[in-house]
Image (cartoon, rainbow, N blue to C red; front, side):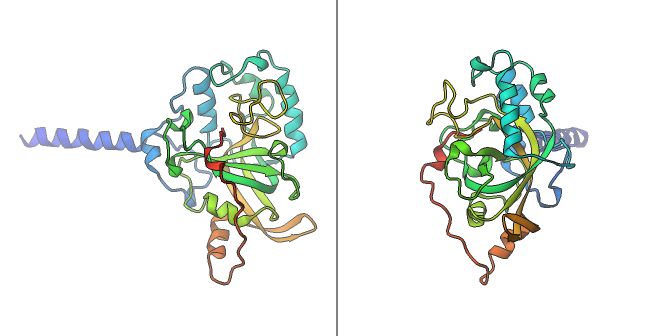
Length: 277
């Protein structure tokens, strides 16, 4: 009888362990500040995707690109976008018709660790009303959905169609990586966003046939920093350049102190419902 109880308990513990490891975080670019969330126990690398969607979702969930970052500018993303547009089948890609191979994207740099310096145009928790396949279609839960960040090279830019995207995925997302903290950074403070370069073939981009302002995120390129590995805020800025960076996790603690200067968060009333991948 004791042996049977031992087997039962061992199997139960094994089941719990497997559940806790549903998302295999084999690489840890922000290990010191990562936080486990319920979605890490319930949603794996490919989310609910199948075929080409599963391949893209697995790419979105890669934390193993490395941290030897290459600087990337908006002009680079535009150049790469033009090359993607020349790939076979580009006009037919959609959420229901995803590329069956990532080789064309890899040849153009997908999987490269990159770093973009610019400004936050806006940030929001994406797909709260509908959920997203990569995050197993969880609805209404900020902790289980991406934080979409629209980045621009100039602080005066207000048009989302002139932005490029970065995504903080929900898996192991640090407690300080929140929309509230990104709003506190504001639109005139330089930020440095680091992570994996990947191409999102799920949507059309601004200005091309098939683009829908209600169904597609506003951006000038399908290339994203996804997932984000690091987010730094400039604390010594002059003439559009930064001489001292601080990780968002440390900056948020400083900003929360009573003496810290506060920036009024921008208002984006429909942002939480906007599509963003």
